[in-house]
Amino acid sequence: MLFYLLCFALILLLPFIKNKGYTLATLFCLAFIMGIRDMIGSKDMYYYSYFFERFSFLDLWHFNFYEPGFKTYTILLKCLSNQREFFFFITAFSLIFLQSFAVKKMNLGRLSYWILFIVLCKFYLLDFVYLRQLMATGLAWIAFSHYFATGKKWESFALFIFAAFFHRSALILLPLFFILNLKNSLKIVFWIYAALTTVVIFQWITPISQKFFTGIGQYFPYLDRLKYYAFENTELKYLYLLEIPLILVVLYFIPKLKNIPALQQRILFNAVFLYGFFSIFSMQNTTFIRFAWFYFLGLASAIVLILNYFNRSEIKNYIKIGILVYYSAIFFRILISFDGGDFIPYKSIFNEFKRNGQFEIYEYRQ
Image 1: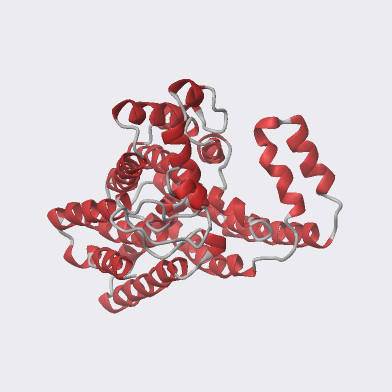
Image 2: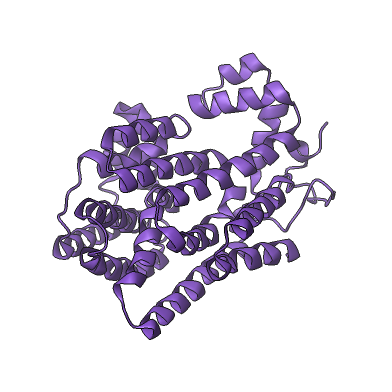
């Protein structure tokens, strides 16, 4: 637990010190601590390590569970070392680099330190678990930040397609580039959210839509995970609705940000809207909250940009306190969530804590 508290302290100081040297040192420390953590991060880590160490190059090449990009990444690392510790170490630095580089590419100056604080509070602990998806998320964020900073749609789209080769869920970013154009209408957003909430609750209390989602998975294999949505109906995760008022407030202020161009306003507005959309969609099946991750950089950037909307320092200070309290709470909420084994008390390659039989066949080399 002390390691986690150290990590949080390093993250917490980012928006206060606002120093490039300190930021680089912090990112290195965070990546290093994550890199030596060995098997912490759910049973997925046991599978990743088993596949990396035991599969041959040919086995990995024909292993259809991995997307082509992540498969190539794994094979390249295996060419250098066959040890799982090496795989986790390099992957930790890769994830931290992708996320921090995407924040830097937003070109928001000293506000970037606040964005980085929000991003790390939300995703640093998740980086221990969701390797493939967060690698795709980091790449997709770079595409998003390039689109935001330069307005070059097709260059950004090429980067986005590259991200989809690491995890196909990155395709959920497609509406941002070609489909959505709400023209900053908060009224439309409100009614879309209300309608979606009604549909999700209706789906929860009735079995009518089961055939619909199952049919999508049957006739469109690339979207086969959607069929599971119809059967995750034991309870609704109402906590996801608690973030919607914050999202609506952020959407209200985005059109008022006159210090950024209209295109950047639209990109942020659409990204924040879609983050809220998938948050509501995930009330019945928390697996789908990962779709919202691809839009989180837009939400974090919009929240921080709203700071510049206010001239009075008192209001800015209140907003900063709100950001610090809210996202610190999220960090510790994730930290204390066992989540079926996804977040195990800290373990590094320098220790050998027993698991009382759980996953031992994968953890200890036979």
